[in-house]
Each structure stands twice: as structure tokens, then as C-alpha cells.
Length: 153
Figure 1: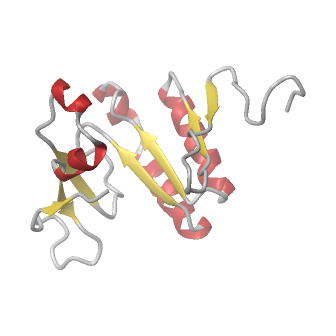
Figure 2: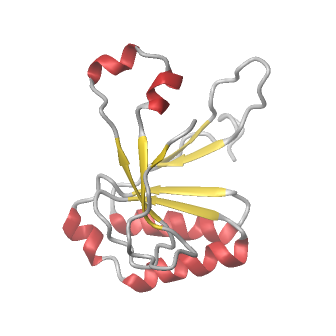
């Protein structure tokens, strides 16, 4: 860490973001790493999962072009799964299409949100999201759709 930068600072391709403090709440830390290339995304995710000091690692692959997403070998996803088991970290991977065969649980998020919703309170927006389970761990038939659930915030 350089003395002229705050803890976390800004890196070449990543950034440490501290959420705003809210009265009466503890201030959680959020490590946000922004990557440009698929190999950088996977390398950062691998390092965070291996570290084991993060309870949740969210890997957003939503803007990755589908050909790049499909080029990621399934062994990568299996390795990430083993790391989450051994380190006790939860991994949340968001993709535009079902693309990770090793996923234990799979959900689709549906909403009816528009730009006008930017003016609405966050609590009312949570009520408009629907979390549709597609594959649940421990289900008798893991590929059969389960009943819809409403997301809660």
C-alpha cells in the first residue's frame, strides 16, 4: 500500500470501493475489481476464491460476449466449485444465459422495471423482482423447474 493513497486505493484495472456509511449500520467492505478481458476476470476470481477471506465472491459475466463465455473450459467452473467447498466461500456467478454446467443452483431473475423505476424506493423495487429457481441443490430432478419464489431484500 502506498502512503499517499487511502487503504485499498485505486489499482490499474481494479478499484476498492467503500460503501457509504449509514447511521445505525455497520459499514461492510466491498472489493470491486473491474476487468476487461475474460482471463483477467477468471484470474481475479481464482485469487479471491483461493484467499478464503471473503464470504461471498460475485463474478459478473453478464457483459461478456457469449463466444468468450462459451470458451471458458468447464474445468474452470469445477475448480471454482472445489475452492468454494474447501474455503467456505460462496460464489455467485451471473451470466446472460445458462453457461456453467457445474452450478449447483441456477436461478433466473425476472422483473418488470423501467427507467421510471429509478424514482421509486428500493424496497418497492425488491417486491417487483421474481427469482425463478431453475435448478436447486438436493432436488429430486435437478433440471426440472421449481415453483417461483419472490425475491426479498
